[in-house]
Length: 196
Image (tube, rainbow, N blue to C red; front, side, top):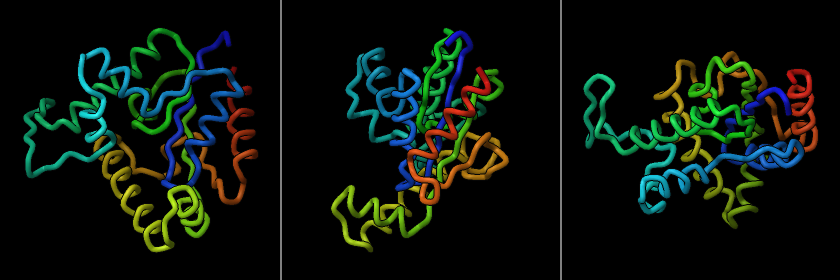
């Protein structure tokens, strides 16, 4: 691709947003950045990735952390900023890529080639997917979905200037339950082609 394209995909838990991102990355032959960012940061900082995973996309714990101006002793905040810097360096290098979560639509805001997407889904379908994916009961799947979305919302709202899932903050909002993965992927890819 001659023009830089960055596709940021945020998602509700169980909406298959990650599967959609993976398909888009494969179809467009682009790198996919998700939790693998942690491995790159851990290697760069000579740390164990398991240590970083505990703080990934988590809201800071106000009981055990302090912030003064832009400085914080919160590992959640420090890791979030390390991931934002990682993505900004990739974008500054001119690389095109797909990124899942990590508040990328905010960290990379203003980039000419950025397309931000929010993937949502119908509650019952998300629960059915989570139940099958993780071998859980309906109740366990429902609790898992709510727990993950509460954390994602808190993380996003802490680092962004708009609310998580608010359609005004994204270029596209897609309901994967109604569209299915194939159509959702096709819509994102047609948007990319129009912007190349």
